[in-house]
Length: 123
Image (cartoon, rainbow, N blue to C red; front, side, top):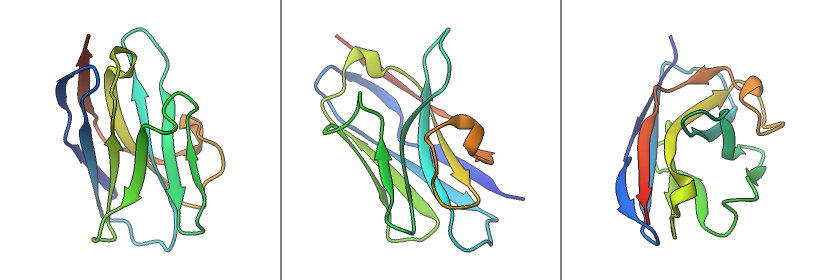
């Protein structure tokens, strides 16, 4: 049973930073695509960033230059460093895992999901 657990959400003022982490349990396959998505109230879930072991990294245009996705020293953990946060970044952030290499930053491409962590940015 694969389980993803997010942490690190919170409330910050515009221009602030947060770091989200995702811990993965029970995944025994080799490779995969690790990603982050977010969903604001009343809006669809959108891809934020993803990377895989083949070196492919992708970001949503809205976060390029501000967010950085990375694998932590523990192979079952990845993070999302978010700098210069803006009110439009507010939402529930989910980590996600695809069982093969990254393809598109679409929620339908991912197989496993965490429950989410809330990020709120005030102006």
